[in-house]
Length: 300
Image (tube, rainbow, N blue to C red):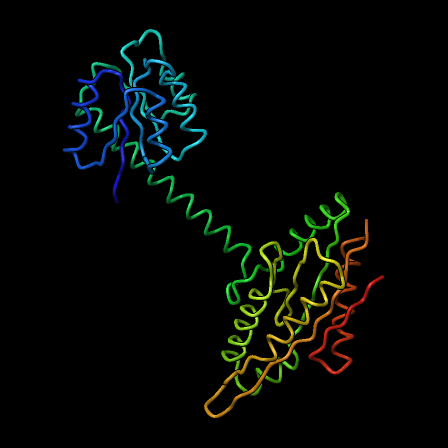
């Protein structure tokens, strides 16, 4: 990994010798004589660690630290020759990862830099792991759509938003037709392929603001914010036709199609969440009763 270090000091001799030492230690370095120049470098380069003196002309090193921590993804090591005027706590409270006193021993500075980089790496790994765990907690492992637990959370958020701003909100509930027969005929692995393919088809028909969920075994649901019931019917039919046009080959020499039945409804101001979902469910069963591979709507 190309680690970039920015050295900020208004003393040319200190800045240049420190930069040379850190370059020799294997890091890519930048240097600046002022906080303003440092910010210019930060705007156009992915700097991992900034090493800055506190005493600078114009903006001082603590103000610079505060701005870096607020606006950039970089750690800061603060240097000062005024041990009586600036405390470790003051620097840390500004967000600095460490404080060193001048005259700086370069070997000590290098050890502190390596420690900060190691802690930074561990923090990034932890954040990545937590992000991955969060995604796993809200995602259906097979279809990669959101799961039913996340659906209820997001639907409540969208319902609250709809009530607050009086914006339309629609819900689709869809079910794969004769899915048990398909599984019985071709096996659950082939059935899983159908679920995956339908998940892909659903996502390809939605906007960025829409969200799709695997609701149950072969049931899916879709939240359509800022969408009237009439518009939602158009979206539903687009999904229905996209799925029906897909040719499945569950075994050699067999080509078949899978269809879905969809129910559509629009949220009513201040309506109970359960009633909203049940109405979509009822509309979906209307599609089933009408012969399947249909879109039915039910509005209050």
